[in-house]
Length: 178
Image (cartoon, rainbow, N blue to C red; front, side, top):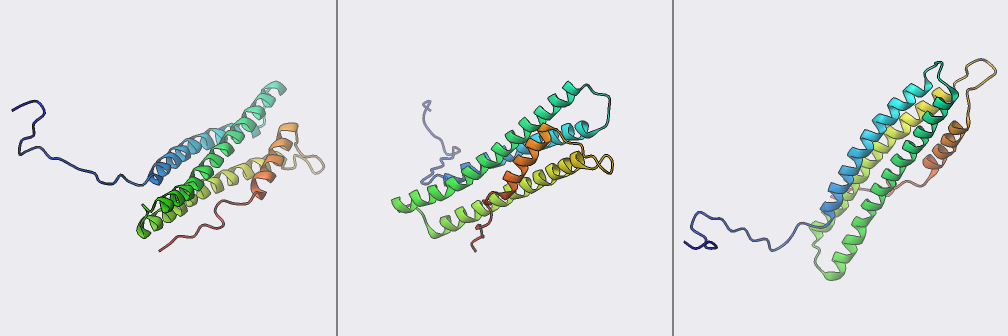
């Protein structure tokens, strides 16, 4: 038998159609969400350490605050990246419509995938917001009846938090198709 020949035991698989491109988006979003989850855990640990009373040098506290701010921004960028990726599904569906290569079933699958991913991102984002809110509350808790613990980083984080929570949501118009 020659090197390229097939015998009866070899299986030949032909693929006339590749899976839809939006399935790649699913893999990307899941990977980003795994990374975001790890970052949230690290941020949570850093926040817990930061709010503990101690005799740390003021420079150490400022460094921790900068790390918290940087990690918070990185996590936010991760959510924004996920949001953009989910929006790309709409563009892929439109392109497929224009080329006529999209069945009704595939369109339904794309919309359901979009809703599923948006739900995952929304759940992760809600967890992040909850943890950030708890951190900010612990930072602003009254240490006495007249004084609150504040500093520049916390004001910056508070301003960022307000902006993050007041933006329009990706998830408000997503409804599953049946």
